[in-house]
Length: 110
Length: 114
Image (cartoon, each protein chain N blue to C red):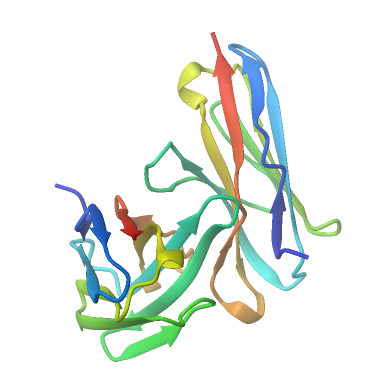
């Protein structure tokens, strides 16, 4: 079983739609959680950290469920510019390093 | 100017050749990392360094070596390149002081081994 698992997609949604991605992690000792965004052939960039209480940044909402060991990202009012691959990232536990999921591809259609 | 730079950006080399990928950062971060990215496999850690005198193997270090020449420079070498080392390579940095381990990535080096 992979340490971090994501649905690879692609998620094809129209502009203005709401879309949600989930991610599961296997190590219950993991300490920190993040969503990174990666545009095609570009470097990953931090989108947002994920806190136990949930957090929101504009149209983006991230939630963490430690009991079920999953993380979610909700994007409201999708824009064409949201088209990218979204990477779920987990830090901590025995490895003490970032573990990256393989990413979920989002394509927002006009 | 970019905070994390990588050279070269693209490289085609032949099997058996030695190649070095270089990474420089102006962020003043202590920690530096080398990853490779392959389709369907995500980012995998090759080596990481928490300061100039600290070098650690990641999950896929075989066939690679690194050198941390200064706080700002971390280079990755392929002593004898093989085709399955064809991948997109990223350097990243993070700041020990923040405790959040947010990583900042360079633009990547696309390496092709023929």
